[in-house]
Length: 151
Image (cartoon, rainbow, N blue to C red; front, side, top):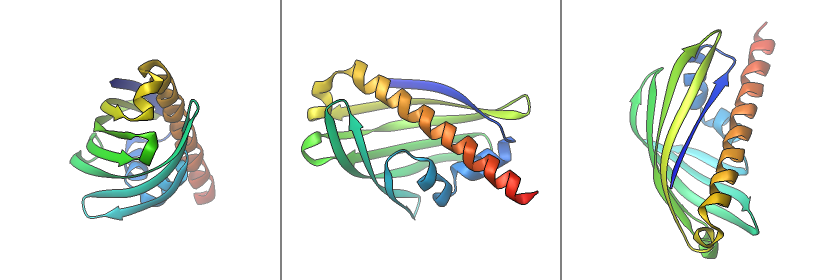
């Protein structure tokens, strides 16, 4: 399944890059994130999500496969939610200047199995888009709060 999207973050590109690489900011911005620890070339995470009727706690690892500072992140990852199923795949995140902010666009290729796969791609895709919107809205909030605190 392919997922794509783009969001504008109301901060300069270098600040957005730093936020996307800061474990504390990510932990706070990722919906349902219970734990997130930087480990080597990536992150170990535990996230609790509800997708349709399936509520599960996923444990997994995201690895930074490619990083071009201020421009591009290539990620791979996989996670397991026990009986709820699994997800694995990769994503490319691109940062581009947009007015006074930064456009963050992503393309992800994800494979799912277990109960998640039985829900159908339409429900999983719409939930993924909702979660991405929540993430970027929260990221905007965090960066705005940091800017206000610095003034």
